[in-house]
Length: 412
Image 1 (cartoon, rainbow, N blue to C red):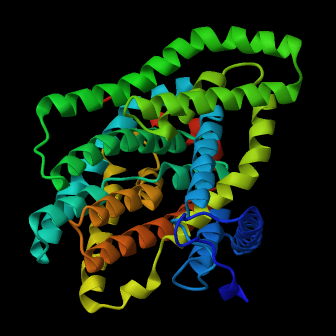
Image 2 (image 1 turned 180 degrees about the vertical axis):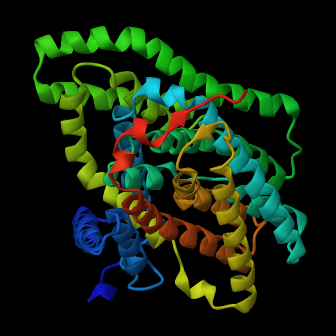
């Protein structure tokens, strides 16, 4: 029955409207059913959604092709909506109050996994460029997956949650810089210091400029919209702002999700934020599960049978976990649940896949090396949500009050 449906046309790569609607229907049903089942056994819904992707993907049932352009577009809209919603729920003052800790976690969480990944890869026989790509793939943190799990657990507003969120966003910005350097390397070009500085300035400068300018311009605009329009108009215009900032961020060399997150930060202190959230949540309930199913569908379990692939994959997974976990303990001047912070930084998700795909497309990685990186992404992505759930349950109600969890202290 499934085999009679061809979801990728041989020449155009397109699908008919009827085929795509069936594809979306199956994805949403599978995501919701397995998401509910995951919650019933005490795990976040995202675990079920990722598992739905693996089952529906090419390596099991073969119903969902994660490379389908139209599905990729829906998934990208989903992650934009996810980060926009996270921005709406984020208190910028609280985020800035843990900014030093978040930056420290992010930097250590980039440098340590990269170094460990590179040296382990070289020790296991990988050539120079594949080892660099492998180390770079270990630097990423999937802000989408981590933020979704923390939100599901009601811990996004805790200080630990804010540190993880801030560090993951900074990780993504640093990841863009590393990706640009790696892309130059695999293309045979030597990256220049000026180019690295320019990329860094654009990435961090855009986020700061968008938040600062937006705080002065956006509130009066939305106050006017509230007087002349209806509640759904506020939500629509908020989405317009998120999309425009995402496009602007992408066009100047940053990432879509950075722009979307900035839009949420700008709107979070306005009096209309709850009306905006209601509209965004309705839309996100359709698009966000597609994103997580697409991430799961990208996993090809058939390529994991080789002993050499498993050796490299498990070795990279081990250093990937250790590097991020240790990073959670890097801000030594705060008292916090650093175990929760370290675990929250573990999942690589779609960001790690981007690095792996870049190396494969450029011919730097062979099939086995790519599969090893996929194994690392798979394990870290699936491991973090249940661990976060277990940690949240163990720490109990005290974490619901950020003041009860973390006491910020400065070293003498």
